[in-house]
Image (cartoon, rainbow, N blue to C red):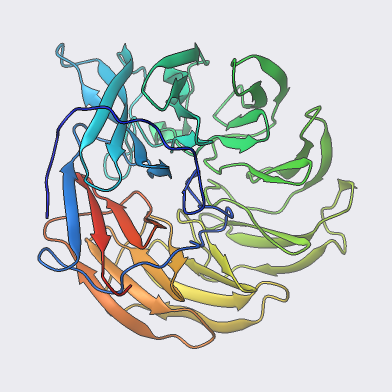
Length: 409
């Protein structure tokens, strides 16, 4: 095991197969292309551990030899926050660079248990990396840590000061931001190389935290009032559908010609919506199936080989047929009482579930519920989601970033 905070610079490597460029992975469904280890501990299959300063619950992303993550560090005055983007060497855990994008005194707090001032996941295309801090701006860096451009954003007011979060989405040359709040919600498309605004549309929405999904020429955004699909080029609404409950957080996923969106707080609902329609789809036959039991409140679902896996914040796991909603197993309780904020991922035919309590429960993918392993790292708690590339699993806890690697994943 190696713990390191060494600053140095390497020649950047272009993005390639095995990268994890955005927080839900290469297919925006939580599924990794590469294997991941089955078992680990403080003394087994732990390649390195790097302490992360400050507090940030954002999921890391990977391009080439670099891992990128955001954090917020209390500044010297005790009131302001340093909003920081870090680059960490993928093989060794060494810190390549650490850049302070801004130092600002926040106007609003965050959820004391689950929140942070750095909860938006960064995103990269393998040449540039974008760090979104919401109210405190959007920053574009190259892989060597040189600032290319920055953009100020309006101060947001979130429900009950729960805090901001989510992630930008990339589509070709466009960077998509959806910023829902208690008033003044909007979605915008920016030129990724310059930050120039290409279009902006007001949204009739209150606070939500779901990351937009780009599918073909449409940008699909989940929210409480309506799920909407926007034209990628113009920002015009192509279709919309109401029916989700409050506080929408899980990201959409697409299963063939169906987009699946869900909410898990008050009036929980899941909508499986047939794509290819236009206009208001509420109550129409475009709604293929719905579900109100065991929905995720915070974690986003995993879609693998036609099966949809999702977990409640209180630790009950469900697997259904993504085309029909038929349950293979429903609200299965895990071996212990767990709480979840991290989204699960799939790799090596397994489902990885990182808990607030520090365990990572590994299930077998498929129609039958089966626990394969339960792994723990001492004294850790996981809010950020796992990522898996190149035969390694990366876990960001409240204190550190871990690389788990097995000779036989």
